[in-house]
Length: 313
Image 1 (cartoon, rainbow, N blue to C red):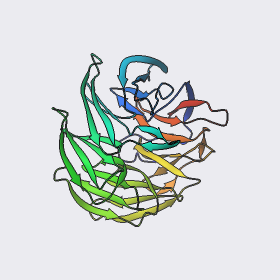
Image 2 (image 1 turned 45 degrees about the vertical axis):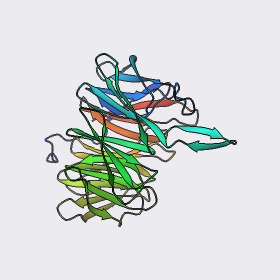
Image 3 (image 1 turned 120 degrees about the horizontal axis):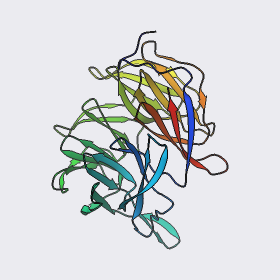
């Protein structure tokens, strides 16, 4: 079979390795390493800083860093790490999310917190596009554009919807909306809405590959979109509940967030699933790709053990 898109082709039965960790937050690539915030140390009620952890793909070993942040949602660019989150307090025995929350920029070489500012809203996701950092906001109809150099809020851009996640693919920003089952597409060059895709009932994840946008629908499908027209090219039925997805090695890899802990793959040349589902266990979350491997965060099985799953095609 010919390679699909990137000159490489994933094997139909990849090797699976499980690397146990104490606690996992959302994954981020820090250089070639896999990074995350140690949520065992994170307390959303105390606003304490937590340690950033990294895994070296050459050794499969997890190490502590000297990096600390108040954030959980991470993005890295060059020698800088950006972090944000929505904190909470308890008032009258009720959990109340704060509306003033941290945004930090950390120097990866020195560990210095170079930017430590407050966002008036509820930051929920973060992405870097060229010289700007974009942050979704579930409290209001605007998102933030942060100047990468100064670390200051450059703009609060009204996108017409509360948003809880953000993805950067093929030169566009994709926002998941808080109150509507729709995918909002924004041009980062202008900050303007390009389109709103409402045909996907429950969008969860977004990736790009072989010139298409791929969106996981928690109802049990992956939808392929043409970014030239925003029309659907295909709908592929997948088992259980698809979550995060990523195109790599000629396949679209899907992490399923249901209890079975399944990973499935789509061949873009046929729009069909390839091979049997890979059962790795746990509730699967983020996917990143580095060192020719697929890395997936598993929130844990019934015993509560969290792990990084490494798939070597």
